[in-house]
Length: 241
Image 1 (cartoon, one colour):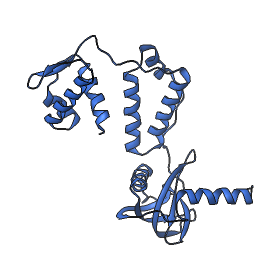
Image 2 (cartoon, one colour; image 1 turned 135 degrees about the horizontal axis):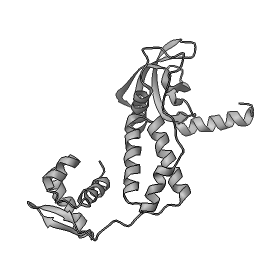
Image 3 (spheres, one colour; image 1 turned 90 degrees about the vertical axis):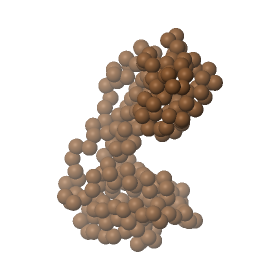
Image 4 (cartoon, rainbow, N blue to C red; image 1 turned 90 degrees about the horizontal axis):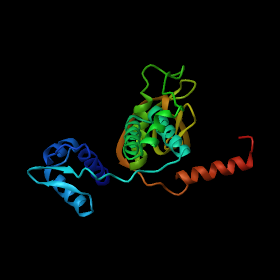
């Protein structure tokens, strides 16, 4: 958890009005008591009116509140829909993060704006079915997305077994670059060491996936920017693509 997030959550816990000991805050945030002492001191020095002391407990002065965030109706709708789409179509970790982010925003909205969140009637139905050509032994798409996202962030090579639309299975070593969402499917853009070229792979067609500890540095002609440049060039030469 980022320190800024931890400080925010400490203030939210103290807003409840009950005396909170450093030990109880530490357990909730999964840090040491000493970390809580430092965080509380820093919050006090920044002007947050936290009452109490180490060994006794802490609370927040009753007349203190965080300044409310202000959004207009369209911004609220965009935030809610975006969060619902991530919760429905993202991997499990991002889905949880989207829900947490929306709750944080909700906590510091004015009551009128808070009511608008529940009033948004735009939804993103979640994964409900598998590709009819998807084999029974294929991986959960959410698990695939989470592993691939981590590999992209850390520039890790992926070893995979992949089945195409004709159920032809191949083993691949991939250098993952980006995940693209097309409304109902996710595709991975990667440099394929087997083909020595860019390839796209549907996330729901991976039979097995292993993120290797081996990392890579995008080489000239093998980066995502190079992929985009090629796509743009191909489309300009053949507008029907």
